[in-house]
Amino acid sequence: MKTDPFAAAILAGGAATRLRPLTDTIPKALIHVNGEPFIYHQLRLLKLRGLTRVVVCTGYLGEMIVDSVGDGSQFDLDVRYSSDGPILLGTGGAIKKARSLLGENFFILYGDSYLECDYLAIQGTFLGYQKLGLMTVFRNDGKWDRSNVEYTENHIISYDKVNRTERMHHIDYGLGILNEAALKMVPDNCAYDLATLYQDLLAKEQLAAVEVDHRFYEIGTHGGLEELSSHLIDKHHSPGETCL
Picture (cartoon, rainbow, N blue to C red):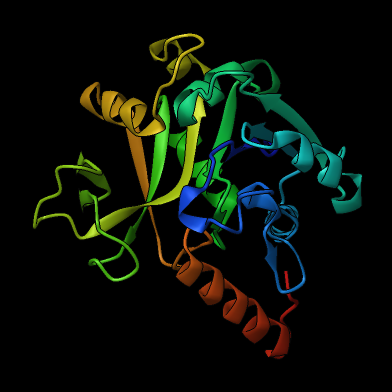
């Protein structure tokens, strides 16, 4: 029986201090990449990969994202919103607050990530594992960012963004899947980091893993912005490719 695509939660609530002064007056999601807001590229990619429902978790200047994206019909998507409110909830807290919009299982990606992987294949792998969470990992070897995952034979041995070791050759790619039951581990209405939830799931042997072979792009830094811009231009000029 064919399974409908999961909803995707986009974590777009941060203040993006590393991108100031660009983000002094607009949220990171609306920074222009090749002439239009980054989130437009992100939403078109999700649609191209077969997703139909998106929940944008907003915080800093979130009303500007709502005004720009609307209900998602311009991207042929159903887009809804969950706002942190007066207190920034962090990546894990924002997901907990949005739980009623997300369904039983759902993707999570960061609001500055552009990830050209096979979402529906990863969804199928997650369902086969029957665990509460899944993290995608990429063999990074410290090239694109600091590696933070020790991974071998389809298993995550350790994951830590702070206490890294020389055995960590992979990185958290930026796309995860959670079952709603995992959110019972997240406290209500307070700041909580998604990385902590992943670590807790790993400790309980409830975190599956999928290794992807497409490098990630991100706009969390000025250098990342330039890399993504160049990548999208290259795709636009490649035979058979369409700029996203």
